[in-house]
Image 1 (cartoon, rainbow, N blue to C red):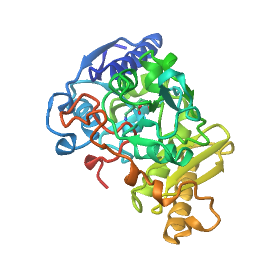
Image 2 (image 1 turned 60 degrees about the vertical axis):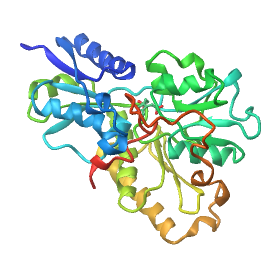
Image 3 (image 1 turned 90 degrees about the horizontal axis):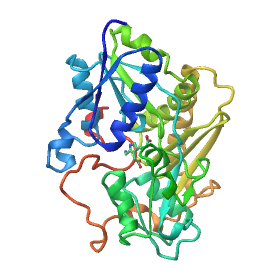
Image 4 (image 1 turned 135 degrees about the vertical axis):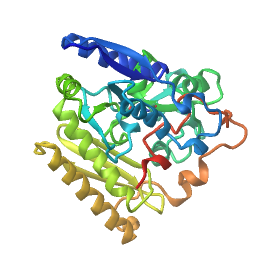
Length: 347
Ligand SMILES: NCc1[nH]cc(CCC(=O)O)c1CC(=O)O
């Protein structure tokens, strides 16, 4: 190795921890690495997020810095990465995954079952809203945004009874001890790619590609390939919240159908040996789910878990008396889940 690798990172606590973790792994493999701060449009612009292009602004500023040759690699939360491949860039490593589960942080350490009737639970993610209401239709789901500290702060301040966040984000910033319940990923199905990282570099940079290849965890790559393919294939035909999570044994999928019911699938995953068959499986599940949706079969023996009256659209959102959903843009001010809505992710 003749050059120090420049790792471009955003300044947020989560971004710098993730970047430092990857930098350390590379250093252990003998590479010299320096962190270079990339100020993203989303970090400096005070306009509402929708006007500056949604969650993709954070990813695309790092990608622009890569393509411009200002940095040599960048670390993203995989679930924030648009499913479409980026021209000129390679997804050179998917390292070992953090905890993929969603987690509840509740006042008094309560579990979901222990929350009082009508408790106010914060999440900006349509997927989490749907899963929460399927388990507890009585809850008042409150749409919140902001970085992890901001969201946990709503519980500490008493404005909310609980919030749901990714266990991985809490683990990375050292706040796992505040979790009152880790949800079973077979039931409360995580977002595609949740807990995993994506390390990108220029596609023609062989030196960085070979350094990053040592960080790649093939089993994680297979899992996230299946999960993201479910999302990509569904995006063509529906805009429902999507949970997709592959364990060593099973690919779990949960999608909210137009009637508001959660539709679930569980497919064997142990025999999926490579990325291509993982994608095929993901596409097959998506096709099956779209057929279900088109046939309007949600009431026909599929165990709808949530009556139409508890659709998040009807009960979630800011009721005006809760935590302020600030129109001021905040670093990480974005839906607390997944890459959509993302006007930049294209098709
Ligand atoms: N979209 C927000 C986001 N993107 C990545 C994480 C951290 C967890 C992860 O790496 O999946 C979070 C926070 C959250 O969902 O609570």
